[in-house]
Length: 274
Image (cartoon, rainbow, N blue to C red; front, side, top):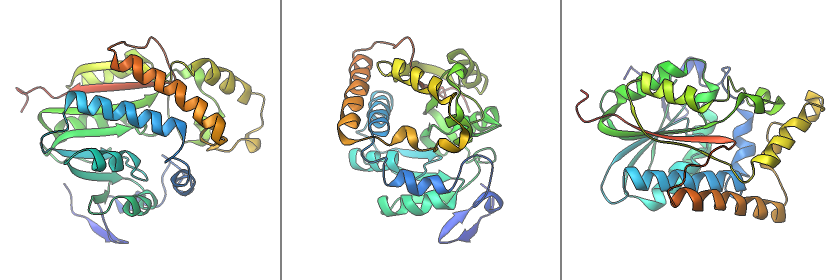
């Protein structure tokens, strides 16, 4: 890795983009920090992510795990409670790292631009959860992560699915794209990985999501808040969480859900790759 600069207590490898870039809004970190711990989408997604990591990487042995775009640290916090992994979190924004530091006592957190990040053969597993869609050079990021993994290591990815679901929420969230399944498959394989699992989630809630996204087309931009999709009353939140739990049940049964609002991919850097 390159030389770094210390800013606000964090090693910053690309300080020129630590406070402002075109990938995300730094103000969103504080809003999400107060909602993501109980929100149905984050909780459901995290359970599915943890299931996949347990299934492919296992929780029993010591491993070095890096999360790219760790944000406020909600996934790393779940791993910290469930495993004895050596954890490292990276985000392009200082603001996300400051919030993550509150949750992740003893976890190393660094600032870095994923399109420039290469830490060759240094990790057993890497997670990139709803991050690639914010990055123009997603192919370059996947190539960098391939180099950063040790042979036999796993890459875990989640991304939003289907460009026809594009709405003003995606604009506000600074998304560059939503992915088609074959597009993600081809990009991951092109980077050198063997894809072990690729499937959808947000399956049972997909009709609601489709209607909700369609209705935003009739709203003016100033009427839409970027975090609106993540905020709901306690009762509604519980109901929505139940439907994502049904997704999880089917995935645990070994079923590949045929469609959904998001994709999850598990890819491996094969042992004979140096």
